[in-house]
Image (cartoon, rainbow, N blue to C red; front, side):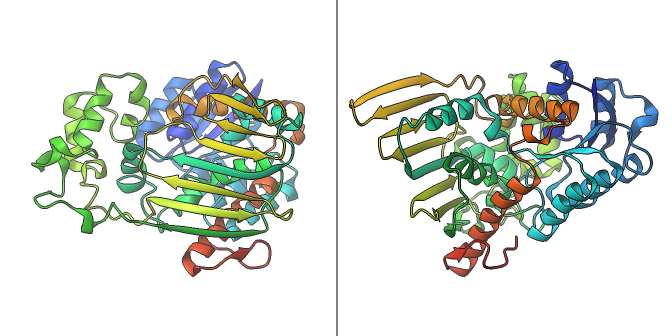
Length: 420
């Protein structure tokens, strides 16, 4: 059986490891995690011996390989060193997205994987979802002809934005990455996958508009627990996290991000003392709350991607317009309109769970783990559609979009340096 080590036992790696173990795909044999509570819980869940439990990734990767492969799921700005070191030791690597905040770091990771001949898969899980597989089959059959335009919508979810991108770990570009890279690099990668081309030119518009001090209502206080407006605020931390207590499925995420004490007392303590109890209008966030990316491909066709905080947390929604038909995609079903017959066929794409990370991105997380373990077991990197170079190419679309947004220009990809 394939063996896996884990560097960074946060929510993403915990989910991947559970899928691998529970599916009988791989054995989890080592972990490095600085948080003592998470480290102990993870080691106990997977029966990892004490000699293979580390507080620092450098200790796990200090000597000979302890596993066939490693999951690198540290915070965004901490991917480079463990990924390069793992490649040097001959570990195959499952790397959480984004690869790294800058093109230089991401390219260095890709080069290390090449240099040492290891398989590297980036966790662009949307490509691996059953829904995407069915869509690609329809496109390959030529049922809508040539793709002329793609319109794609990523609704982050009003409470998810508040949780992760206003109060949470991905709120600040200097500490993590731009919103487009941290959250929606999935989406640009998926658009490129569906179109089959990397765009030539990119423009983008986006700002932080709502979650600022200027939007703070009169009478609001720095923390939700003290705020007289809390009962009528849609971003109430008290309401969000107390509601999670009654739903065991939400204990892992989002509640697990703020506390390991799943009691009312534990939640109140976390909201009183930790970052997740802050008013959304009184945080140190600077990532955008809405953004639009406009892409033009070499064949003259186009695509748009809209990311917004202000909607329900739902599956991505996409309209694909072709010369012979069109497809409306909602993450669960595909509505295929045939122009010749003027008939619409509705196809159940069997997405399964909901759109959230806690539910495995509609089967995408499981598909990723299955593909990665198979690639390691068979020694076949061709089983990985999100390898280092394919992912680096779509990351470059993100960096080009960010350059375009900041400079108010149209950026030609491959003809200008792109930085986070």
